[in-house]
Amino acid sequence: MQTKILLDEEEMPKRWYNIQADLPTPMDPPLHPATGKPAVPDDLRHIFPMELIRQEMSTERYIDIPGEVRDILTLWRPSPLYRARRLEAALKTPAKIYYKWEGVSPPGSHKPNTAIPQAYYNREEGIERLATETGAGQWGSSLAFATSLFDMECTVYMVRSSYEQKPYRKSMMQVYGAECIPSPSEKTRSGKAVLDKDPNTPGSLGIAISEAVEDAAAHENTNYALGSVLNHVCLHQTIIGQEAQQQLAAVDAYPDVVIGCVGGGTNFAGLSFPFAGAKITGKHPETDIIAVEPSACPTLTKGLYAYDFGDVAGLTPLMRMFTLGHDFVPPAIHAGGLRYHGASPLVSRLVQDGIVRPVAYRQNEVFEAAVMFARTEGIVVAPEAAHAVKAAVDEALRCRETGDAKTILFNNSGHGNFDFSSYEAYFAGKLVDYEYPAELIKESLARLPVTG
Ligand SMILES: *Cc1c(COP(=O)(O)O)cnc(C)c1O
Image (tube, rainbow, N blue to C red; front, side):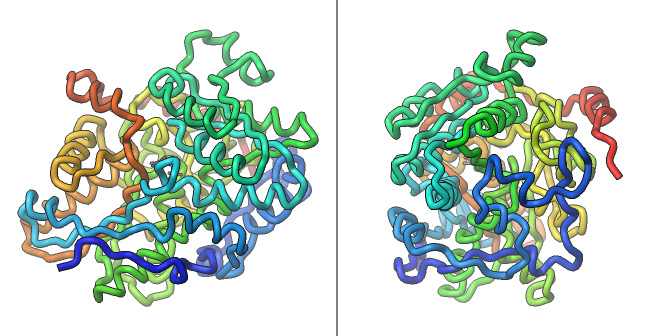
């Protein structure tokens, strides 16, 4: 009986897997926000290093992980793969449930997998400071961790609702030497514009991105770093799925179902893209790949597949993706990392092409699954990761009905050790099960930029 499947450090993948190489048709190009013409590398040079722009557009199947980056990743990687035997027993399911545990990184989530290479490439190109946004605080603390290892400065615009719910994430950024500012702030023009309209706004990722991009564009020594959504971020996360493939192979298993939660889509991409590649190329065409989102911010299940901005102010290139409209401000649910109006263009494409199946859940049922997971497997998961737990539980219960002994794999993207105020709200019966605000979505979709 094997509960925990570990790899040696030397077995950590040496290359990232780029799913763009295996797409049946190329991705639609990002468009310049002002001209609406396809964006060229030079359009992005004022905020990103050349190597990340190259990776963003690359169609090479594999991209080497630099030695210095691999060295740092071994601080916590390869991450363990667990078989959730006690959860299986509690559910009385014939299914086998495996999960990849990304909460072992120092900041506690999958995000350092991309924070480290992003800081590395920026430092290689002479950048001294990175500006970024953060939702739940996971990305901010991950980039703060990464920049501290490379002796760089870091400025984090943190969505105000999370800043107030999770003061200790801010403290963690401070320990790593970063500056953390609640967003919207008075520091930027885009922040001021939002505050003028609504001084009590809970903020949103879209607003915080505008502030960080504006900050980076205004300072020569500063670049912008994004913890989710973009192709190169998905790319860096594929180390998760490649490790999982090796770990499952070690016990002669292959998943029938692969599950991840989706905010911008990168932990989901990281686990699922190697399996999606095998699905597209016909090696494993039957794999059911499930993207889980909150019903309060139902980008993949209720949004439109269209060109939209990545931020509220319209400073980022237009990307073709599932979107609820760039000025959609989702309700302040406790899975702050899943409050984003858009989704990764790569994940969106796979949903559009029927390779990935999206589902949405409400807060209370998600926390119920998270509590069951804690009481069987011991780990208190992040509210974001709890969405993946809930989908895995549902799939396992379906197996109980059908008698099917499926192998289910989900990404446990992070721990919830900074999220106890959310658990407290759940136990106190204070979590609101937002139905998606249909009228709001319709209104913001009507304001989508016109392209083509
Ligand atoms: C940020 C975060 C997410 C959501 O971001 P993705 O890019 O969709 O992965 C999910 N889980 C955890 C633990 C996070 O910190």
